[in-house]
Amino acid sequence: MTFKANLSLGRHGWLRLTPAYSRHLVEELVAPLGKRDRVLDPFCGTGTTALTCAEHGMRADTVDINPFLVWLANAKFAAYTPAQLEEAKVFAASVRLAGTNGDFWHPPLHDIEKWWHAQDLHALSALFNAIKHARVSEPARNLLLSAFCRVAIETAAVSFGHQSMSFKPRNGEQGMVDLHSPANLKGHFTRRLHEVLEAAQTPLDGTLARARLGDSRHLHGVLTSKYKCVITSPPYPNRISYIRELRPYMYWLGYLTDGRQAGDLDWQAIGGTWGCATSNLTRWQPDPTITALLSSVSLSASDGERAGVRCGFLDTIAGIAARSQILSHYVHKYFEDCVWHIRSLARVLAKGAAVHYIVGNSKFYDVMVPTELLYAGLLRQHGFADVTVENIRKRNSKKELFEFVVSGRFGG
Image 1 (spheres, helix red, strand yellow):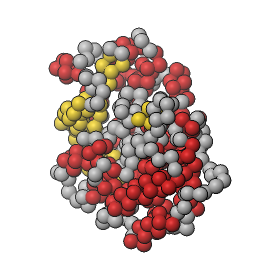
Image 2: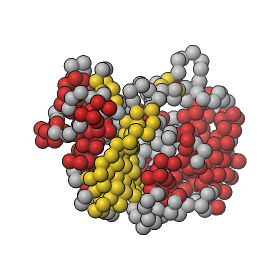
Image 3: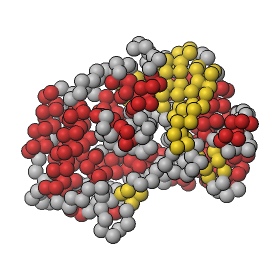
Image 4: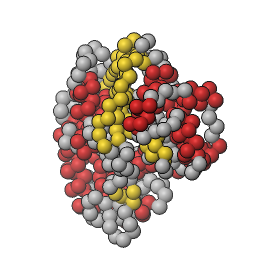
């Protein structure tokens, strides 16, 4: 069900973003659809839903507030010509990193020496400079940059042993691969590029899937189609910041230039807490109308017992607030944003549209947050019928945490 399951599946394995659901789950959920039905993923991530649909000859649109993820998804969705693939191969064969002197640009990432060994950083900078100035087509450059991003994160001194990325101790231990020389880094880049090109040469109709930059709380301002199916995995209310996880790529490719930008972007994202987004939470005030709606979400006794919940939404918020006011604001704002998202989603759905949300529950201190039950309740409140909750897997974290598919059908 995770990114690891996607690694061997061509374009799906181009770049890591944890956690991720699998292509196989999407295939199961789209099986009842016809070829003419259009699918929407309002939380793009690495583009799993839309790419899977395109691979099966179905049209799909996806939206994300993060411009890097929009770029990555569209690179995955594109059809590449033999000439464009050859351009990338020629570049890899001719690029020189060994013996490159002088200072090359590297991103203004805070404490960058914490991320890369000095020799690896110099070689990465030389490689990025070469890609940036290469006389190749834009599709070929996108392929080169996709491979570059893989190499950049694999040489960084970070670990993915937990849900979120963490730094390794400063004891000389480096990235997933130990290179420390331009020749070694070029060899690693060539191998990663070969994997990217091998996937890119697989036939794909490049007109079927498209990623758009936009806010999932205002989908009606971005999309004009009516969709028959939604398959998506929004951020979980677990304080994992995707801006934080994606910083190295975003700085290298120019989508971020300072920490303030990162915090501002995360504040716009549902569930964002990075940088200034955290301080903004201290001043945030809930919308009374939305709070009243959330407090009226029905949790049946059986549902509540299964989720380990003994109370309603406001009691959950109060339980968290007793330990941390800022975390209670975080959870409250997360679900308020979900309400705005679902209201906007209803405006772009066809009558009878199926929706499938892959979500995970959370725990703050000793308070369980039944994300799956709250999504189910919100869907019912907004005109969705036949709402079901299916537990699909145990997460790699606390024993009480699981992943669910919350499904329903839009009444129109």
